[in-house]
Amino acid sequence: MARIIGGIAASHTPTIGFAYDEHKQDDASWAPIFDAFEPVGAWLKEQAPDAIVYIFNDHMTSFFFDHYSAFTLGIGEEYAPADEGGGPRDLPPVPGNPKLAQHIGASLVTDEFDMSFFQDKPLDHGFFSPMSVLLEREDGHWPTTIVPLQVGVLQFPIPSAARCYKLGTALRRAIESYPEDIRVAVVATGGLSHQVHGERAGFNNPDWDEVFLDAITNDPRSLTELTHAEYAALGGLEGSEVIMWLIMRGALSDNVRRVHSSFYLPSMTGISTLLLENEAQQLPGAGAERHRARMAEQLAGIEKLEGTYPFTLATSVKSYRVNRFLHEMVRPEHRERFHADEEASYAEAGLSEEERTLLRDRDWRGLIHYGVSFFMLEKLAAVIGVSNLHVYAAMRGEPLEEFLKTRNTQVIYSVAGRQASAAE
Ligand code: FE
Image 1 (cartoon, helix red, strand yellow):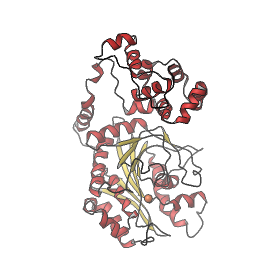
Image 2 (cartoon, helix red, strand yellow):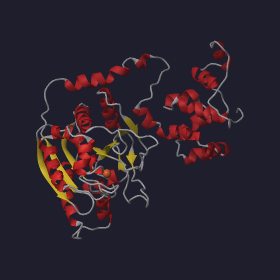
Image 3 (cartoon, rainbow, N blue to C red):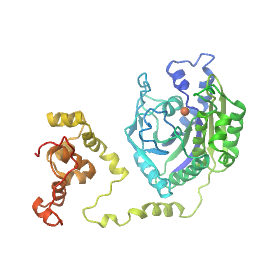
């Protein structure tokens, strides 16, 4: 069974990444940042966790107001650094851990956290700023795998501190019920006190930061009583992102060992690191098995439904590339490219030979078996001028006329709009 070895919290100011990229280790103004991260980095190197659940918030880089979610779990194969305006940082993509992420995602939903899921998104300084100083790369390779958890703290309403702590306790159950014997660390980033907008920009409160660091270690539940307004009053509105630390803390045992703690205020934001070793006992009993059985309850028996293929997180990761290719059909330029030179558009999308063959053959049934969502098929159908009914009949392995006889009316339709092309 998986075990949580400890929790880490760290500020994620862009200054940390800047100091690292500009080699400021020996500069008096910047050196305290490296001193703060060094013991935590050494602990991670020594402990060598198999995976890190990494809680952070994006800063309107990859998660924008066009679709803003509270808790978004990364299920992808890897995560590259984002371009925040001046080009991405020179760091290799971090490997994900889709299998662990799928288990955690399913477990959290079972515990009634209605999660969002993402993949194929570059991540900004909320993620990479501390990451680049916490984990050493050898030959350009990160030493562990990451399950990112993005928390939407920038558009109110946002989750309460109490909700974050509760998510942490559910995260603990999720990790501790993972059947593989792996060692997992939980990292949360953000804070400490700062405000970067409005007339109050530049607000700091090191006294509160000290109280917060003590409370998150010794009395985290007390911190769940505070409102967002109280966090903003004490630590600045942007500093309220420290509620993410409560997710990490909720995943640990009540008793923890504080191995390291630091605080430094160079400019706008209190930069802090905190390392807590988990003192949780592995209790006897079949709690994890019972929890896994509950996780399996909702889809139990669905495998007996002939010709039915639920679209799961595993399917989503496996077939992401081809689903994305077909989803792009919502853009006129992509459709034009596809019509002009189908083979070239497959190549540009990096599709595998198997994927290309399925698309080339318009193998509707094969595409479903492969893990393509039906709602991608109906887009392709619209683009090539084929009706939905044609696709239904082909998936059933029947001639269109035969299938139509089974309907109350013999209508033909598709999702094609005004630009629909002529039938193939
Ligand atoms: Fe932030």
